[in-house]
Amino acid sequence: MANRLRTGIDVLDRKLDGGIPAGSIVVLSAQPASQAELFLYELTATRGTLWLSLDRTAESVIASIEQTPANTGDPTVRHISGEAPLDNAGKLVSALPETSNLIVDPLDVLEAQEPHSRFRAFMNDLQNHIVNTGSLAIVHCLDGREVPPLRDTTEHFADVVFQLNTTTAGDEVENRLAIPKFRGGRAPTDIIKLNLVEEVSIDTSRDIA
Image (tube, rainbow, N blue to C red; front, side, top):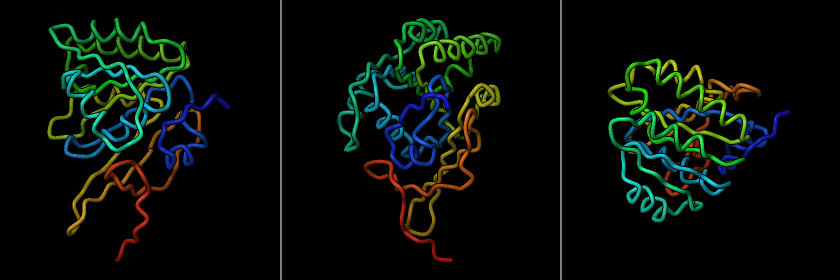
């Protein structure tokens, strides 16, 4: 069995037989108006983390991590801006050390770059480096009003896909996590109901039909 890397979220690690195989690319697909960032914050507590921010400034990301009640680490945060985000992201990825976390937040900015062949080249280079270093890459994909044309390509490259669905039911916000894809292991068949308030945990409340 491949070496497993913990996500830092106990409920997921138990479901995944200890974690995610080293060398994996993981898609975290979630609506922009959700608490999905808690997944990313808690991941930083597991091992050294490089956080590439494509939207928010590095200062904004660091402030959010410092303010969250969740258990976190001290990631290196880099804001990627300018006219060549794929090139800039690629240079930082190539320097990722052994057994590290890489967070790309959100990947949408890179998926929108043209020509599309350059994004595919970036993903191939990312995959090779993550495998060679035995690391874990989490790419945050916004499942909002505008989905980039290369989202299918991203999910095809991904070894693991987390789909977080956030809905409002009555007077409650409900979060459900599905894991439809899991290379190198067994994908859980059940939907996990989560409580995303201060940290990621199982929602133990019972649904009333």
